[in-house]
Length: 80
Image 1 (spheres, helix red, strand yellow):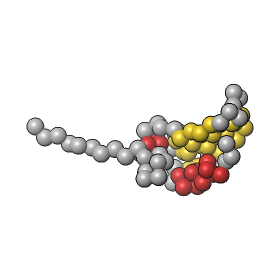
Image 2 (cartoon, helix red, strand yellow; image 1 turned 90 degrees about the horizontal axis):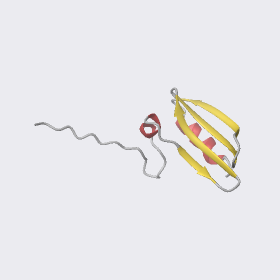
Image 3 (cartoon, rainbow, N blue to C red; image 1 turned 180 degrees about the vertical axis):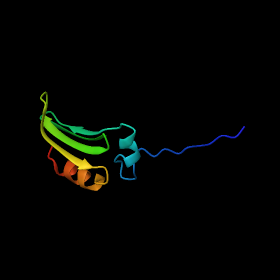
Image 4 (spheres, rainbow, N blue to C red; image 1 turned 120 degrees about the vertical axis):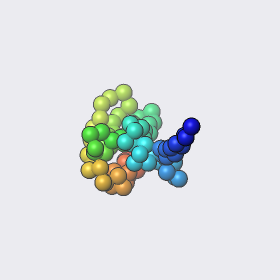
């Protein structure tokens, strides 16, 4: 029998999700008692949303699938 070992890297070295991780449906999230924020991929676009705890989002930005770096920068600049 031949077995193929597939290495799946969901995270990059600094602990953030990889493009592959986002494509598999993983979500990067952060929250405090006052607010939350998330970065995820849906329909080949990256979405960054933020809102107050217990409420819906107040910010929602969308980035093309080749703009993960821009989406991460926007996500990281949101205060939590």
